[in-house]
Length: 314
Image (tube, rainbow, N blue to C red; front, side):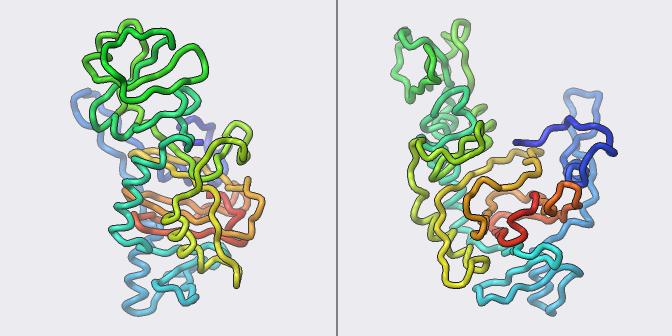
C-alpha cells in the first residue's frame, strides 16, 4: 500500500511511477553518522499550488492554463482541471478549529477498537495508543497464563494465539525485556499507517467486511463530509458516508498510486480532507501510463473526485 524504493529501470516504470519517484523525498549521502541528513533538492516548479491560484483569482480573476473555476454557489472558491472532469479542489475549506478537532480525533479516537488499523494483523486491536505513547508506556507480549508482572496494565489485547500484548510502565517492561518481546508505544504510534471508520475494509480480500464489528462514522464528521461533498453530488441527492479511511503519513512517506474501486456505487464522490503538514498529491488518468498532475495539499484543503475523476489513479 505504501510506496517503496524498489523499482526497475526508468523504461520499465509507468508514467505515474516515474512522477512518484520524481517527487519522493530522498536524502544526500553523508559519510558522517553524526551529521544530520539533508534532503535532496527537488524541482517543484511544475506543482500546482491552489492556495496561490485562489489568491490570484480573488485579486484579478486570472487562472493558469488548464485550471478552471467551478461556479456552483459554494461558500468559497472551488477549482477543477479541464482534462479531469469531476475533480474539485477546495483550498482552505476547513477552519483552523475544524483542523485541530479532526487532527485530535484522528490520533486519539479513530484508531480505537472496533476500528481496525494496520497494527491489527500483528498485535490485534490496541486501545489508547496515543495516551500510552504520551505516557511513555511499552507494549509487552506475554503468554496468557503468565501473571508475573506486578503492575496493573493499562490495556490488554490478544493477537489470536497463546500470547497477548499489554501496556506497562517502562521500568516494569524493562525487567521483562529479556524474556518477552517489547515495543515502545511511541514506535507503534509512529508506525500507524491507517485506521478505518464505519464499515471496515478487509485489506486481505479487498472488500468491505459487513460482518466485522464497527461503529458508525461520527455524526459531526458525517455532517462535515456532506457539506463538503455538495459541489460534486448529483442534483437532489444527499451524500451519505458509510465508510472512511484515515491515512497517517510521516516525513517521506508515500502512498502508491491506486484506485478506490471497491465501492458498489461510483456515482457518489470520494471526499478527501487533508490535515497536518503540506504534501504533494498526484492525480493521474484512467491508466498508470497517463502522466499525473502534481499539486500541493495543505492542511484544511478538501479534494472531491466524482464522475470521470472517480476512475483516475491517484
